[in-house]
Length: 127
Image 1 (cartoon, rainbow, N blue to C red):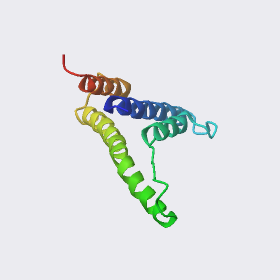
Image 2: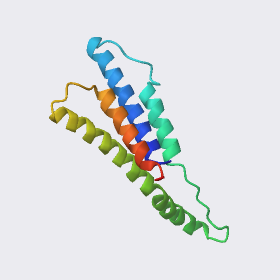
Image 3: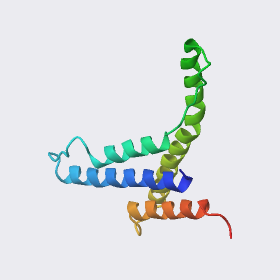
Image 4: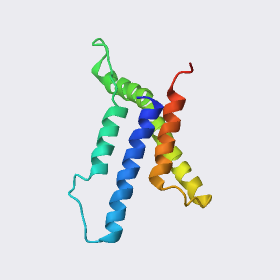
C-alpha cells in the first residue's frame, strides 16, 4: 500500500466520521446500525494495511515458534502502523492549519481532497 493509498483511506474514514457527526449534531437521537460506515472503513484499512506473511521454518522448536512469530510480526507491522499514524497526523495537521489560518473559503472535505491529491502526486515517479 502506497503512502497515497493510506492517506486516501484515512481521508475516507475522516470524511465519513465528519458526516456522521453532522447528522448526530442535527439529530442527537439518530444512531446508525452497529456496522457504521467508518467502522467498516477502519476494518478494511486494518486488514489491508496490516496484511503480512510470516513463514517459520518447520525445523524450529514449538517453544521458539511463538517468540519468532512475535518478533517477525513486530518487524513486519511496525512500518505499516507508522504509515497509518503518519497519514492520520497529516490529515489532522492539514485540517488544523486551515482552521488556525481562519480559512473559510474551503470546506474540510476540500482540504482533505487536496491532501489526497498532494500525496498522490508525491507518490508518482518523476518523469
